[in-house]
Length: 297
Length: 281
Image (cartoon, rainbow over all chains, first blue to last red; front, side, top):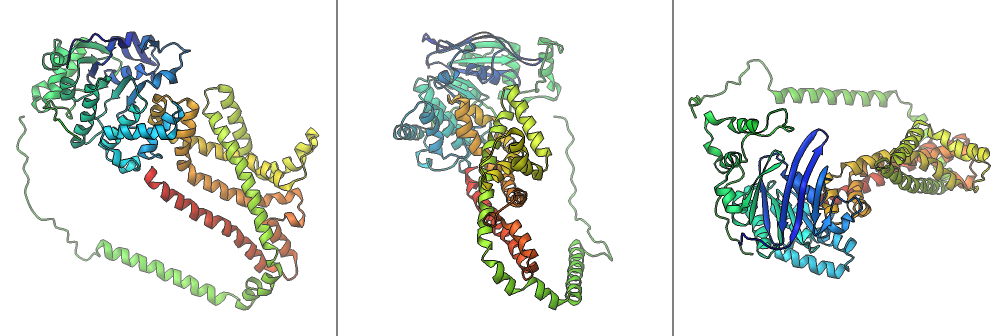
């Protein structure tokens, strides 16, 4: 995928701070995402990745700073936020399908209520999107009858049914059994190849490296590295990113003498008084770099 | 890693405890003792009871024939009073629940005040107040319709209880559901109506059923409003037959059993609804 992006900016974040009470989660974020670009956000738990993503469609209200989405200033209190959100699809870690509606019902609801499409038109669009994620035959099922991977693909199809210009993914595979992760990643890769602008918070380093145009490494509420995917994943410039990636990519190689090392590096970077949140040592064992298999459906 | 190899030694557990019963034998013995006591109690009651008098008082067919014709109308009245009160209770309860969850402080205060006030008062006092107190004090004249008065009084009380159940149900719907709906561009109202409330109803079905059953029984309080024979509900009808020379306790219990005709099918219906919600959960 091309790493030189010159499309129009879809997301423009400048000087973004977010605090929950005394807990300063985001400490001055500047980030621009261009049209057709796939930006993966990685970093340790509690580094503020999800909060940053949720500030983009204003599920969290920024404390200070500016967030522009599709040219609209989201922090403006008079903005018609519902209108902007119809153009911004969001996929959650816990899927959040509506359990009282069938798969088709999940996809049709907002199309009819928000976009005022007719039921026939909405159904046709829903079926087309279900087809795209390989689940057209499960349209009459209820979410509880589907596996996690299927539920997440339905959630992606639900977001796509609104014809979004930007898709946000909040750790979309973190709640899945390992053997189901591939199906969801394949759908996301197809979407990226079709030219969707995407912002993906993830622990899947293989996905970030192979599908992402840019990788943003966050730690302690700040962007530590921001560069072409392959470079940040395979050859990080900063010590913090290097330790994090080593832990994630080689979770079994941590030596007894190394235990707690990540904590020390963090402590040097941010004296305890400034650190607002307890951070877990080490990375996530559920991620490993390997070839991302092509899956046809 | 520099841990010592974990050593395990295979062997057999020694579970023998000489002279003691096994847990299963002990459970069987205690169960046997309980059944023995139960049988003993039944035999004692059967032996001590005056069966002639029991037959005359509790199983008098003649009494059933005498009052039987009046039961359907009383049953119908109880049903109508309950239904009307419940409709008011559900609508008002939902509004109060939403007010309690509102961002507007004044709404929250008003709802809290209402709920605390009507939960604290005996229902009987509210029925009195609606029937006599308020119309006198304010000079308003309610239409002389017993169904309206009962529904108003009991509905207002019941709404206070129901509001708390509904609020809990709405809050029990996971936050992610609201976020998913809002991120699709749905407004707060659309999210409530299409996503949150349908799920909350499934959650609050058991407490709401309880509330309907309580309402059914509370309709007996409407006697204080002064009923004509045509307006008698079950409890009032039962009191009347108790006064009659030949009515007696048989008719009284027959009418009492009519409450079960309402509540038992209701419970059955709700259990079926819960089962059919099962897969949509």
